[in-house]
Image (cartoon, rainbow over all chains, first blue to last red; front, side, top):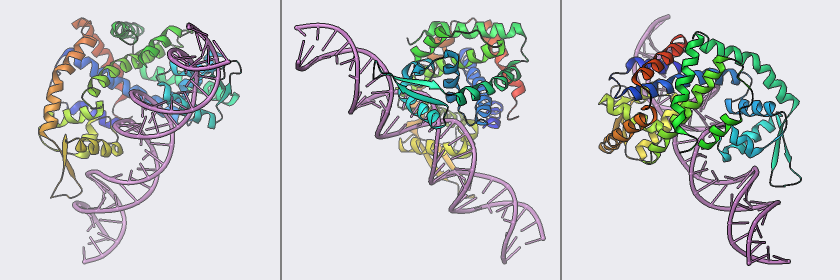
Length: 159
Length: 159
DNA sequence: GGCATATAGTTGACATGTAAAGTATTTACA
DNA sequence: TGTAAATACTTTACATGTCAACTATATGCC
């Protein structure tokens, strides 16, 4: 799948319809490339990117979170979170605890195994980030961030 | 799902572990935002982004393409292409033709309906690109493209 | 108290991305 | 010629993103 992307770039025949289109396709392609690397890294530890994300959120929070609160903080849409947590629970990486005060709420807590796994991934993840973007100068990274934020700015949350 | 992303950004507590990490998360978030808009636009025409992509490739080529050639030019991994083409075929937007010389090969041709649909989408797609990135100055778009290509450059096809 | 409404999650249906294995042809070569 | 290896796809299995609809519990208001 990786080889393909590049082939595609080479095969591209016509010029872009607009500079905006060029940039947005460029963005998507670049993003895909990065995500593929992370997907691979996580897969080596039997995790998907979404699963890793949930574990990192839970570790970052330091305490159990309601399941919908987790969905809010990820790309996952509400219905998808159920299965995601199911699989993490089955793998022993998180635990579900029903809230006694409000029995509708289900808290999700990271287990020691989950914590260990995400801790173990810290170094490789950081290393991968460096390896993917480390060849850009600090000023370039800064400019990139500025441009990306400028793109996102008018998009607002959900306009 | 859109509202969430921004909430997440606001809730972000800790600084980034590195400038590279910040940039790559920034990239992914931005990309998601853009893709969401396109997904919505295509959905209004009962298409998914992948389906639109296939139709555009076929129209661009101007002649039928072997099914794996299409997979090569999209993000779709080989096995996924089968179902994708199935659904386009069911919708009457493409047609499968077995190659008489090499009976292993299956050509996919866009139908008049498919051509019309993708033509009808040209304007809205271009408009959306402008609306999403039009607030960047030409020099900014150019710099963005340069940076994105610089990121992708060492990634090569499939290293 | 008791019903309308809101909130937290789950379920089901469908499209996709991905890997691994299987089928049908074709090609290469002993 | 006849068999092994390559090629073009398809099938299967599983995780996810997405929408619509459903269940359970809680709250508000009369």
